Image 1: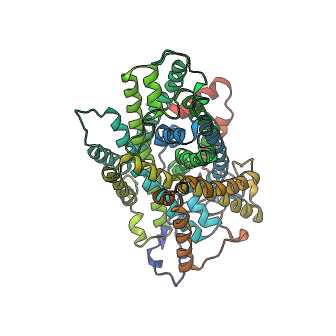
Image 2: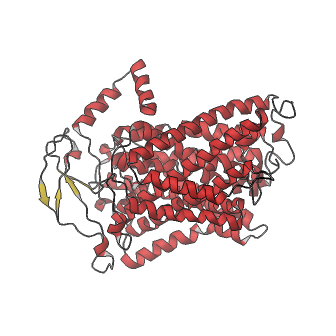
Image 3: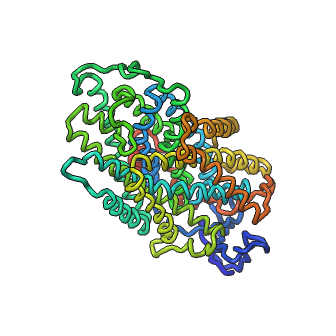
Length: 567
């Protein structure tokens, strides 16, 4: 097959005949479906003389048009979603304010460790498949297949859960004389997010930027409103302080069972934080921008989750009416706004939550479509080439439409009840997120083992300072919470809740065994791991730009930081 060379810095362009070894062996029935779009980059005249100057193979042709401000705000959008605004209600009701705060602090720590591991790999090899693509390179092909199925399934179901959440939000404005057809709203926004994901990726980035900005402003205003309401500007006109921490069974409602139940909700809320690396294949200058985003994760967790849970637990009692029912979830954010202001203030916050649901749906569709695109690229699907088709904007429209179609599950809310359906979908997605974080830790350990065996540690541009203790802690701790968090399904026994908590523990190994049965592949040996294909080599222009930006000091550095986020 003849392919054209790409260019890196002063790389020599040439046309070469390159015979691609299929990702499948001769026994593979899907061998002819593997996608062989390979770009060879010759770096004989590279800007540097380090080991990176060897030939690099790149297989992706997506549009690398997301600017630093887009990548930064997509990271924020992944943090602030329906999980934060709505799942908090279920968590507060189930465990009380003490369990809520401690649980989110613990899971925040897990996320921070996970992102350090992921940042190390995605800076070295920024591709849109992110850790799923890494799992094939550094673990095994069958593990990669299972992980990709898990993540795509999670994102696709998230599209449905976010559209279901939209119906819950609209229920806030329901009156006896007016019943809005919620299915129509879901249909409208379902079509909207499709449109945003099949056009130029920059339009997606721009939409996420402004939706994320609105959410950030709403959270900051929430902090102010929470303090005002706590100090006495509330319907009772009394100082609240920490009264809700000693109200009834608070601060630890339902004991240990209540505490562990929150893990799946907090995992649903934190889900999406890691998907910022899915933009790796479409982000400019990833060697500089990816580490910058990763390093801000700690502060985003502290600001948007820990502080938020603290204020929610202070102002809203765990037994507040309608905090959690099968048909309705009332957001603690809306409650606080209403306490500190008027019905109009509550409506404003509810409107923000509605846009948040749209943003979260948009975010999930973007992530899921990129995973499905990469499954096609890896030859994991029948008619793999079909799923890698891109339009004139270089958007993988077939993968987008396929992922988008799963969002039709949201219309089941009309029969099951939006609150009940949202709860089930939340549990499924939460466990799927946990499996992803556990897998990132496993892949990180394998990645380092390979670099050490091949003497390439010095090529890392960004290092995980917690290695090896951080990844091992994530593996052990996340494994434990996956097993114990479904306690509430056993006492009393609830079949539907049991399956929502543990369905993923069946799906993931079945996918792994299924692909192993087809391929009979083995774990990658450290010395055989591929650190050439898809490795990112900086151009001469990027090297000079990064050198200049890193040398900035004082006001110049502040101006550049503002530019990265807002311009």
